[in-house]
Image (cartoon, rainbow, N blue to C red):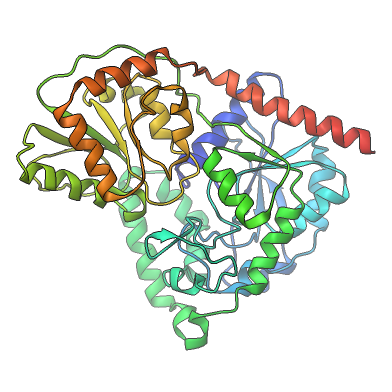
Length: 452
């Protein structure tokens, strides 16, 4: 994966970390490979090495790529050459010969050279790829253009979505040892972000030096990632949404839909009683592609129409909102989930992007809490066993308003949805999920051995 906490966070990191630990507890021998430092000077491509960190991650042997490819996060890509730079694959050959893995599980291509996959395939090692986001078929990883699903299979519009792409100074700072030290201390995070902005300003962004740099030819980048996808043995699609989007770009590929989870999720389903106030919860960042502003606008409109027995509970590290119906809360840990869930009646997951899953929805359902979920969100797959579909709507602002208004005036809908979730057939225990992944590994290893 592209890094470990606290430097890297989010659903992908949580999933991969918990998966490794549980696999190890179930008897697997697991090692982790992550991108390391990029030098601000020199030809990085000729100096790529793999070395073992002195400190393991959660007792898992951890290796770092010295001079990896840059990590763009969700900011897009402008410097095509930097992200397709070749390296001597000897370092990867020695690394893989030392570990002799039966299988490789890739959670993202960010920071990873194509030569790694080339070497793994030449050694006959099967590769699994989990579709956490759309990086590789979308430079910005979210498959949106101007708020709508991107239909451009030729990447002609990618420059527009990459105007905030990192320059070399930014990559180097974010992948430096200094930045990792800053990220280890919560109170230093804001200072680290300020330092990044200042460093970027002083060093100068390469992307502003030439008008042509704003609209590069993405043909090379597209083919680079397509060639990497062709070396994947099987895809782990974490939802039907992810499978549909990936197959629309790559064609049909060997793989399975296995809904994801994490170690903090267990079967805590229970019955609830609902009072006069409708308490709507929203977990996460305040960004348009997650539908946050759609939700805010809809709640505001309902409140103006007289639906004043309504509260929108926001759990985020972002600054507070001032609307009368908003209740601001800091983000929470897994240990606090039980008390947080008791403070809401329904969770809103109003994503506008084709989110590959959405762990917040699974967390809510595992406690029996109904979920309002956009049809663009992969987590809707969890709710197929519920008679009401967990309030799945068409993803539009009007659709969200219609659902919220129905729930507001007909609270018995929540009672029914809660009952449906309590009785739905779904395995919430984490080892069951990990066993499904291990079964996928075993099938691929068996097929691979037959071919040798």
